[in-house]
Structure formats: structure tokens, C-alpha cells
Length: 91
Length: 300
Image (tube, rainbow over all chains, first blue to last red; front, side):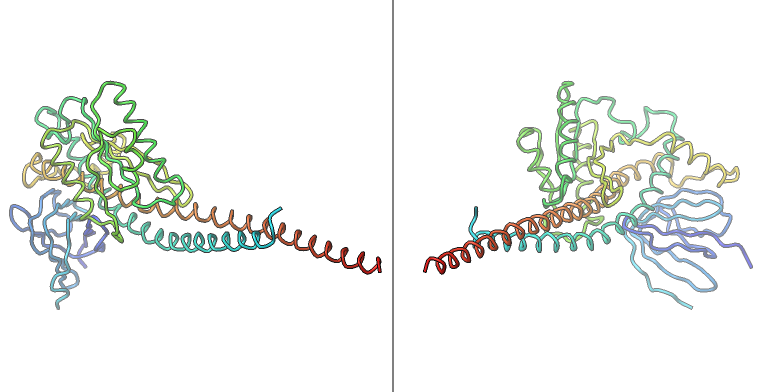
């Protein structure tokens, strides 16, 4: 079983998502990128777009309206201004 | 001595008051729980934002090129005080303790010959400061009739502050609100938000944690460090305002709850003592009537 990373999705009003996941795809301001466990540390601005969380072969979408991401080898923290539930879970 | 009817009326009126205060206490208690949850839910964002900013700020060595929101305008002549209070009264010393702190600071600053402007968020603070600072008060921002405070409200305040800062209307901005400690203690606090105050002890701590977390690797910034800082600092203002408003909301309900608890208890004591007086005078009257009847019968 591969490593997992701690992913936190935080809006100003509450902690929206916090769990161990396989990976996330992040809509960065200068291009989308994916983060897997042991990613090199990055701080990036986000553009409006879709954030995809991958876990156990499933994906979960959230639409973001810009924000900020802090990636460390242990985990990813996304600070987003407004978060909408995306298409939801898909197989 | 008051007549029996007067006493009865007074007891009834105190009972009615007690009913109101008890209802208000219970309403405040249930609102408090929700407000407290909201305040706690907002903490992770504000904490992480603080951590990221401290981290970025620590990396900036050249203060001349640093954004003005962080480094300041280089002067501290003009102050903007944001006073966040409640929209309603009947919550003990909540509003007045915040206003008192803000007033003391404003008077101190003016005594030092500095220019002061006061922006009130919430009607009560504006009412309290109106008399002393007629010329310094700006048009207040009120959220009357709103059920809950959210990001939008904070943004409204944040945008106003940032617009004024961009228009070079003040140098230093301080935010006054009541920090929610627990139900019986709320601490009025002044927090400087422009230029951003970043606690160095906190920053040191974070730096240590970060060094552990990164395992020696260096951060990549996308876009440049300064660009990120430029984008984050205005957002930080809004987040700080939001946090203050949410803490305030919880404090308000806490203060109201304990104030109404006291009022209910006082009303109870008052009813007790009035009832005793009432019973005593009723008995005295009966005794007096009996004596009159008996002595009348004896005379026959």
C-alpha cells in the first residue's frame, strides 16, 4: 500500500475536508498540478477551478474560487475563499 | 405601607420581567452554542493563514521592497480604529467594555497629537462613542437583522479598510473586539492589523516546525514570493476581521447569557421578598379585622 498524504481543505468559515488521501489535483494560478505523497514543498496561488481529490480509486471534486495552497512532503493544505461541492464522488 | 393590591401588581410585573429574562437567557444559550461552533470552525483557516504569512514574512529581509500592508507606510501619525460591537444591548458589559477600551486608546493617541478615525462595526459601539468622538467617527457599518455573520460581512469591512488604506487615509489600523474566553469571561482586545503584526515567538516556533516538516528541502513559490505576499495580505485583513466578528458574536451571546441569568436570579429574589411583605400585610389585615369583630362582640 502506497503512502498517503494528509489533505486539508479549509474555507474561512470551516474545515471542509480533512483526511488521508492518495493524491490531489490542484488548479494552480500558473498551471494545474498534482500532488502525491512526498511532494517537494510548494506554495502557490490558485485560480478558480476544480480541485480533485483521489482516494482508493475514487475521485471527489470541489470547485474553488481562487485561494492558496501550501504543499509539504507530509500533506497539502488548501485555503480557499469559497468552496462548492463539485460533481461529487465518481467511481 | 403599600396596599395589598399594589403589592400584587408589583409581584405580577416582576414575574413578567423574569419570564422575559429567562427566555432571553435560553435563547442566548442556544445561539451561543452555534456562535461558538462558528468561531471554532473559523480558527483553522486563520491559524494556517497566520502560519503561512509568518513563514513568508520571515523570508523577507529587504523591508523597503516589502508590501505596505506588512511594512507600514513608515509613519504612525494617522490611526484607524475599527470598533466591533453588537447590534443589540441587554448583554451586560459587553458593548461598553469594548467601547471603553477603544475610547481610552483613542484619547491616548489624540493626546499624543495623532490623528484618529473610528470606524464602528455594529450600532452599539457607534452609539457609545458618538458623544466623545463626533468628528472622528466614520459612517458605521451595521449588520442589523442578520442571523449570522459570515465571510461576506467580513469582506465588506475588509474592502472598506483596504480601499481607505490604498487611498492613503491612515497609517495604522487597529481592530477592537471581544475575545471569547469562555461563557463568563470575554476579554476586550485591541489587535493591530495594519501593518500586519506577526508574533515573533510564533514565527520562530513555526520556523522550527517547518524545518522539521520540510526535511531540508526548500520551498518553491509559484508565482514569486512577493506576488503571493501581495495577494495574501489583503486576504489576511478580511480573515482577521472575520475572526474578530465571529469571536464577538460568541462573546455577545455569552455576555447576554450571564447577564440574563443574573437578571432572572435578581427577579426571583425580588419576588420572594415582595411575597413575604405581601403575606405579612395580608395577615396583619386579617388580624386587625378579627380584633375589630371580637371587640365589637364583647362590647354588646
